[in-house]
Amino acid sequence: MARILVVDDDEGVRSFIAEALEMEGHAAMQAASAEEALRLLADNSFHLMITDLRMPGQGGMALLKQARAEWPEMETLVLTAFGTVQSAVEAMKLGAFDFLQKPIANPETLRLLVGRALERSSLRSLRERVQRTDAPPLVLSYGAPAMQHVGFQLHKVATTDATVLLLGESGTGKEVAARLLHTLSARAAGPFVAVNCAALSDTLLESELFGHEKGAFTGATGRRRGRIELAEGGTFFLDEVGELKPEQQAKLLRVLQERRIERLGGVTSLPVDVRWVAATNRDLLAQVAQGRFRADLYHRLAVFPIYLPPLRERREDILPLAEALLARIGAELGKPGLRLTPESGAWLRAQPWPGNVRELGNALERAAILAEQLSIGSELFAPSSPLRVPQSQAVHGSGEAGERTLEQLERQAILDALERNSGHRKQAAEQLGIGLRTLYDRLKQYGIS
Image (cartoon, rainbow, N blue to C red):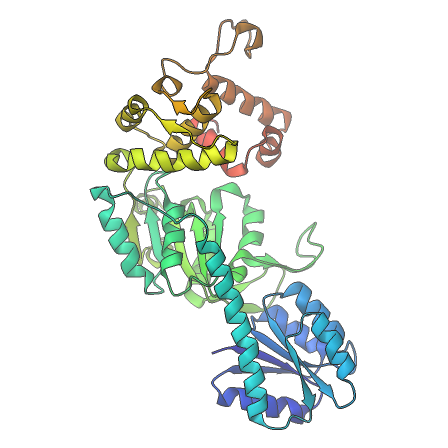
């Protein structure tokens, strides 16, 4: 049932409300002041807060304003004495669901209003879920035999809360699989939150995962909830988990064991209710044998491992996947109606695609940019016919002449950006006009360390 915070300076009123809610199966916590309520809100997650408006100290209206700003997903009900209905109306303008006049007539009136508030919360989650389903459906495979076991396993494990470890080469669709798992699960109405372990520095990663308190480090000007906390009631996806450093592995293991987190700079542990999904392109068992990955963490993550085969082992998917990607790319580029010629389709199916779906998408995007007409021929893909830059426009090294391929130009542009920004990858990505994850993909592709 729901977790509810009851705030009132009158102990008798608090106890009456809490007992009535607990008889309905809800978990109720009590606070005697706005200040105490804020401490409880910082350390716990609530579905609903019921607060008096007139209390010594900060007062209920100020508490409501802060709660709506920091915990907008939480519903609120306000208590008001006879003759102060105008204050309750003001509270509803600030986002309160409704108000109850004191003295409360009977427990049934309270339960009815609480039920309506929680129902609105559920309907909002359902509406967000429907909006997500309006997006193009997640498709992991178009019928390739090598992918049948993946679909079967995802559907089976989705009905549970078991931790899932997605394995496979880079670019095989592990994040798509994680999102599909979330969509198929009972947590689909909740959030799906993802963190890429390779894209953040050690300090930033810990702050992103666990959040931080004000003053926890230089630049921490206020409290921030971590990604794990934001995934409450939903799915938390830890991508590239094999990149975690030993210290981070130990902290993650503790969270998985205890189902609680501590924000950086904080002293209170917070309960978390998330479904864990992790992914890696590393051989974690080999890393365990080498002492680079904790064996106990591996076994916590690999409760239900699922292997995603590379694109070269599922060639039946290549053409329909390419057509779906091209439709999306064409829409983004303002070139609707782009299509592959039979020759280009055959060429795509014959390639090894070491970068898998991600490499296929990159090749299609480049071809779509180069295309002068709606039909995309194989000449826009073939290595023997890459984009060439006239010598006058080519990027030259020391004494180098002639033309360079697009890959060479791109690699040089990345090296130049990194040099200009003293190796700072985020700044380099911003200067290049690409996402940080895209930059990491290119660094791997071109062997840039």
